[in-house]
Image (cartoon, rainbow, N blue to C red):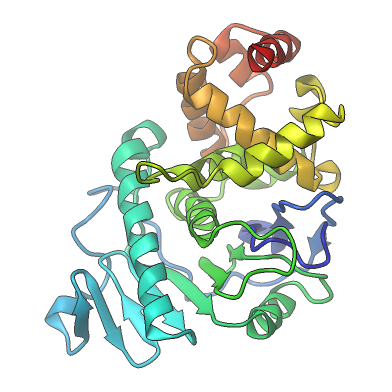
Length: 324
């Protein structure tokens, strides 16, 4: 892992108190295992009702919060949207920018894939912390994962909170849009379902899909002429030209200890290919396997059975498709 990773994800597995990184650097991602209790502040899951209610928790429009723009309210260092609660030490302009990004992603992800993945927002708004400077962000990271050299952004499942930083990482930083969308995808998926057998993901049970879907979501909602996925794709293409692409049978079995920075870029490109139905039934298989993964029902080989191909056959088809 890079000593200063591009703002990217740390997916924290609260059930076991683990902080598990999903980096964009080129080195191995060390596993950190710090047993911590799940915070009582973690938003409570809902098992029924609307997938995307009009508002989560307290309605800021009915309170003393000041509406500074349509759909964004502010009170001191806190901002609110319909479904997100933001604590920020950044400028009001930056805080509002992140608030807009976060709310748009929540609405788009749940409205588009809520039925397919059985997503449902928790009772309370999704917590998000915006740090203006890397020093404060680093302090928060050290509290979550003492001794860790650094990530660009992270999701802490113990508290259900996403942390992002306005100041970019020194090297390899992705757009802020990518950080917010990726982290909040992990957050929404995690807070939509009980954490039944979630730990299996990080021991090689479809980790490629868990991270690949979040990385694919970085481009979800891009306006015309914008390509937030481009940095990952370009890094992957450079590695592919050097022969640094992992074959899919190996990639599909990787656990967290062996999942390197380059694998995040590779899974992002692969899931983009599958969600565009580069192979017949690709999107359906991604969503069905991910839905089962969230509920602890995914079995080895489910994804391959869903597309009617072995991992080796998909590998050959995907590589051929990328050469054409």
